Length: 127
Image (cartoon, rainbow, N blue to C red; front, side, top):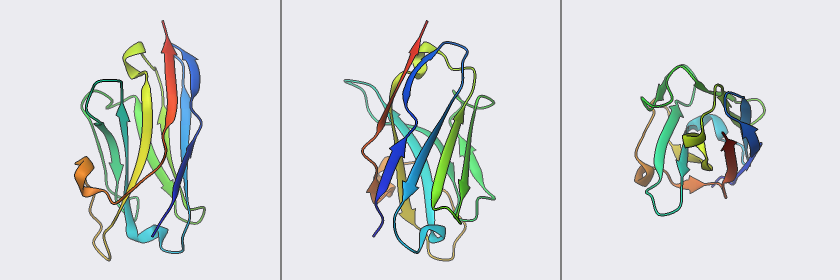
């Protein structure tokens, strides 16, 4: 089992940058695929980015390609989301999620696939 704790949210001006972090407990962090999702009130949780257990493979939602970067440091049990050129539509609660993949170096984009979730961190982008 793994526990996830996000941090780094806050208020940022449009065009600015922010880096979110998600720290995980447990000794098998490098056997999990990880992802970031976001959610606004009244809407479904939306996929943002995902990364395989090794960090070699990543995949992004079309709406964030070129502006957001997911990365992980398996030695620190942490996954990051670097967000650049933020726009007001990026305002949301951002969640990290983990899914155990064993030895497969896969990534996943569907919320229902993920077994573990953090509590979320609010990002507000002002125009």
